[in-house]
Amino acid sequence: MAEFLEGLVISNLGKGLAVESKNKTILCQSRRNLEKIAVGDRVLWSQTGVDQGRVEKILPRRSLLARPNRNGKIRPVAANIDKVFVVFAIEPYCDFLLIDQYLAICENKTIDAELVFNKIDLGQNTDIENELLIYQSLNYPIHRVSTITQTGQEELRQALNQHISILTGQSGVGKSSLTNALIPNKDLKTKSISETTKHGRHTTTAATLYHLPDGGALIDSPGVAIFGLAELSEQQLAFGFREFQPLIEQCQFHNCRHLHDKGCAIYHAAETGKIAKSRYQRFLKLREKMPTKN
Ligand code: GDP
Ligand code: ZN
Image 1 (cartoon, protein in one colour):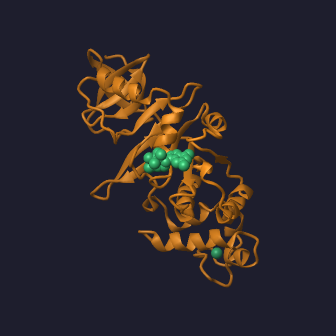
Image 2 (spheres, protein in one colour):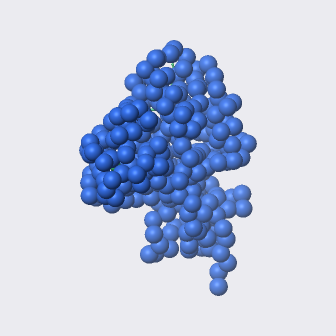
Image 3 (tube, rainbow, N blue to C red):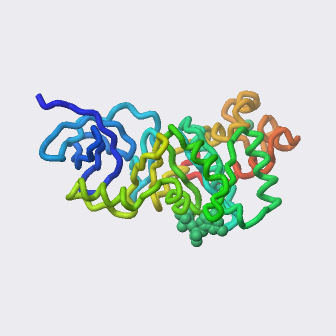
């Protein structure tokens, strides 16, 4: 029987998977009937040729981020992530609704979430600062950075250290600029993946795992929206607002939808200022946007 080796999927190249194993990168095909494999997956693979192999088994995942494809089917994109960095900036104007959506998904997947306020060289904004006080009180770490002045980059590096992370946020907030700053020689590394795996052409949109100089890894998935609301139920959305969690049990009805209901502990807490009203309002907005309200 062929020997099974352990490997780490570092990129999905279309024609196969780039699997890192024993300091080599091997182009692997997936065994038939195996469920879809994601970047960050730990796998068992067997050799089928020189620097070529077949993934036989996916090892248990710590977490999984997915996105729906064109047919609406959920497709895994990144596995085993333990930290998500939500990037935002003054410009384009900070979309807290989107931030809360990301945070709610992370909360449900038990993935740590941290906020990255990029472009702080552009100055201060009182509205944003007031909103950030809320996140601070909810124990979300906030990193203030600039890729131009390099402010805060060392602190961000330390937060990334020893973790498998991903940056997310709306287009234009500076995710690629940050990724380039955090991963030295990123382009060279990308090129070497496509060269060592010869047949697999690395496309710029392929999600790729890059090791960080001090340990840990950053999964770069340019242009890939992997935080869809489709993955959450209405109950999960409420749970995703961490300040709601101790209140959910106190609602008068166990199937409370946390709307403007009289017996709703969350509505009451928002009305009396025990929790932030702005977050509650964004919860209501996200609830309206949910594709599958049940
Ligand atoms: P992405 O779409 O999130 O990947 O954002 P990009 O990295 O492509 O950056 C979008 C724009 O913001 C580019 O024009 C960058 O030069 C600019 N940018 C990125 N980081 C900073 C920053 O720290 N300060 C300022 N002023 N501009 C930045
Ligand atoms: Zn309620």
